[in-house]
Image 1 (tube, rainbow, N blue to C red):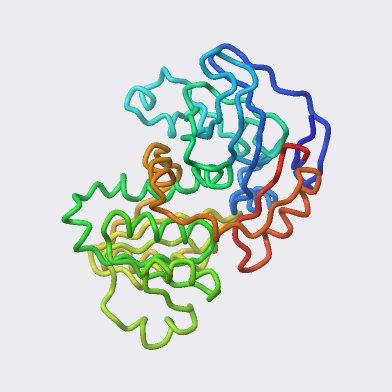
Image 2: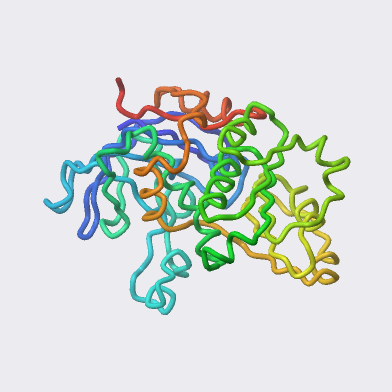
Length: 327
């Protein structure tokens, strides 16, 4: 099969053996895969990964348990052992021996086929298109914030939430927090991206504008750093009210200096947030509660995978999809 591979130095398209469905796993014929900022960071050295890239996908089960064959699916990306203390607590995403699709010790979905445990698969409702379904993994990551904060609907309605970053994840996080009931403000660098949220009634500001008069407004109960940059933490900390919550969604390759004084002085809660629950993401997609179609910037054949990553790395570009069907 053809696959997009990172060898530690460069990204290229190679021939790779098709994965075989082992016991408890399935082989999925990948239809579409989405390029994520994490993929770009991996190609810069993050996680020291080598192998097939990609972890956002939708496809059809080609081999595995008969009950799954032929079904259209998406898949959670953390492959847990199922037997350790973390797994028994329902925290398979934090299993100490986990493998992570396209990120840690497991080949990813920028390929014609990918393998995943059956326990990780979710059937895609008929009402959800392939183009929408490929957003399930990042949308689940957005809903993870709602799950982690565990507020009641009435409590969410009292929350002022700031989302920093107008990339793919930032736009999904803003929508997820709006669905939860928060009053959301989104700040970014690209007006055309922010306009996706403006059509939903979410208040938006360009970063340069926000750095002026708006930054002096009352600080926020919840601030989410989805900038994908090392600078995001300081901006988020300054925008969070005393004893508020700063949610970190950015993963950036390399070591970076962070000033924790604002965290101590303002007694902030810093919440790391990674993967999330697929069920609410699929439900939101099925109900049309989120708008993901405007996030698609380009659809590129698998054979042009390296070009797709270069395109996705351009400032302001939203979701680049890889068509893995060969059509």
